[in-house]
Image (cartoon, rainbow, N blue to C red; front, side, top):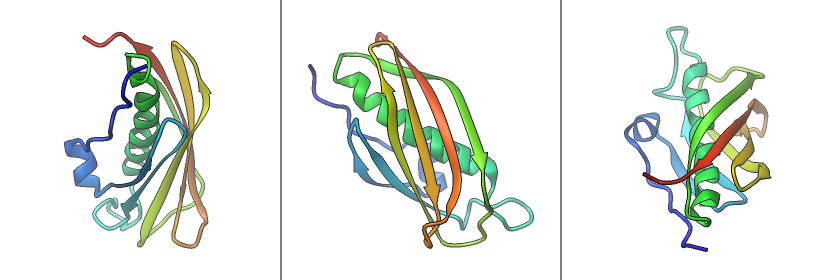
Amino acid sequence: MTTPWTITLGALDEKLGIEVLEQSAQRVVATMPVAGNTQSLHRLHGGATAAFTEALGSWCALIHASTVGKVCAGVDLNITHHRGATDGILTGTATPVHLGRTVTSHEIVVTDEQGRRICTARITNQLIEPR
């Protein structure tokens, strides 16, 4: 076992305004503002939400992978948008569905400040040897 990887924000994560609140192989929680992440109709952009969920699920997978000396690469992202948002702060929570030696799957739930579900995503990551 090696030391778990610690989340480091990338350039896109910073542009989205993501803030990490909690991180472990069992749960990653972060926030993202709606402001700055809207489309031309001033509603939350689905692509911003997808990038947010992909980051959370991949981070959770990478923390797990790092404990067995591996890294990960996303192979599938599925997202269902349940409702729109025009303001406020969103909270995303990634939890594992399966933590294997070669593949992980995570569910990511994004809610608004009222606790209403904005979207549900699922990401699958392949665990690979680091280069």
